[in-house]
Every structure is written in structure tokens, then in C-alpha cells.
Image (cartoon, rainbow, N blue to C red; front, side, top):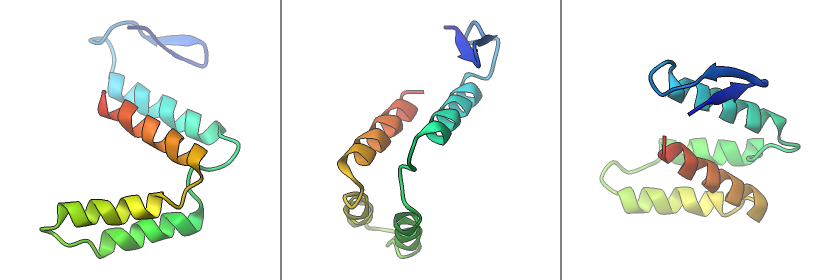
Length: 91
């Protein structure tokens, strides 16, 4: 696999570079170039507040709380966010 950053080859095999690091750099550049942020500052604060009130033994309830907050995102932003999360999960 060849990884390009700014048009330059930075990695041409899985063994010659830290592939995860370059994926993170590419994701960061992608997110930085979006015309609008995926998440507003108020929604981000709601997510951080939800993390502070999670119940240790209630994974389903905690997930439902987070998804109910994420449902406040515009559809395009939510689809973009979920697509990126799925992509990260495959690395």
C-alpha cells in the first residue's frame, strides 16, 4: 500500500512506516479542510457532559445517551462522522 501526503510518497509498504500514524494525519487534514466542523461547540460540550455522567455497568444506556446527542447533528454531518468512525475501525 502506498500512502501519499501532500503528493509525496511517505510509505510504500505496511512494514516501512507507522501506517496508523499516517492515517491519523490524513484524517486530521481531512477534518481541518471541511467547510464547517462536524460538531458544534455546544454539541461537543453535551458529549463531554454525557461522558461524565455515564454509568459504569450500563453500556447500552450509555450508548443510547451518546447516540441521542449525536442525533442532533445535521444528517450530512452524522453520516460523515459515522463513515469516518467505521473507517478508523478498519485500521
